[in-house]
Length: 186
Image 1 (tube, rainbow, N blue to C red):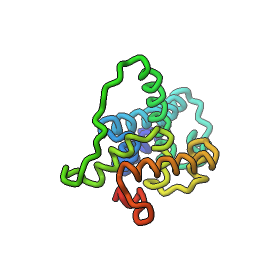
Image 2 (tube, helix red, strand yellow; image 1 turned 90 degrees about the horizontal axis):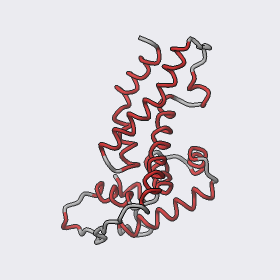
Image 3 (cartoon, rainbow, N blue to C red; image 1 turned 60 degrees about the horizontal axis):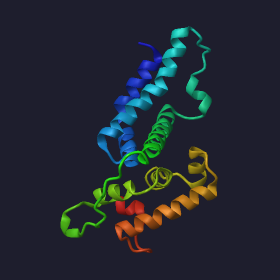
Image 4 (cartoon, rainbow, N blue to C red; image 1 turned 180 degrees about the vertical axis):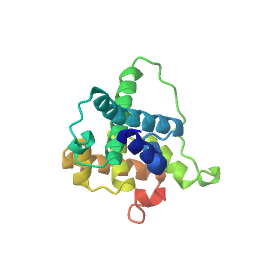
């Protein structure tokens, strides 16, 4: 078994659920989250397979060039794939007929859990806002780390976080000073 195959098997076995959870927080759909993880793993490890097949091994792991662990690289690939798919869908929404949605907020008597409410609220955010919220409140990254991960300016990240927090606060009806969005998700 090639070293990259062993690394892939170990990553899928030990961190597969965490990767699917990360993808789920981004997209809000279990099947789509699983597809995102699978596509990201293929994207990352296909590069290793090609390199091994050409005999061009230099003794340096190709993912080491990116300064992180393989899991971090896969997480970045998941985020990139999610944002690319969103852009593709957004481009075609003008062509399709729009379907009316029910904008009424659910009351506490509906039986929806806080976790489901947060997932529904996250679905209302733009992809960049959602990515910033996920990285900040679910991955516990700082604003500079988020800016670096997404290739944005720190001010832009702060604006996305502020806009997303205001939107989520309105949708979740969270009081301003008592609870953060991350606490509402737990």
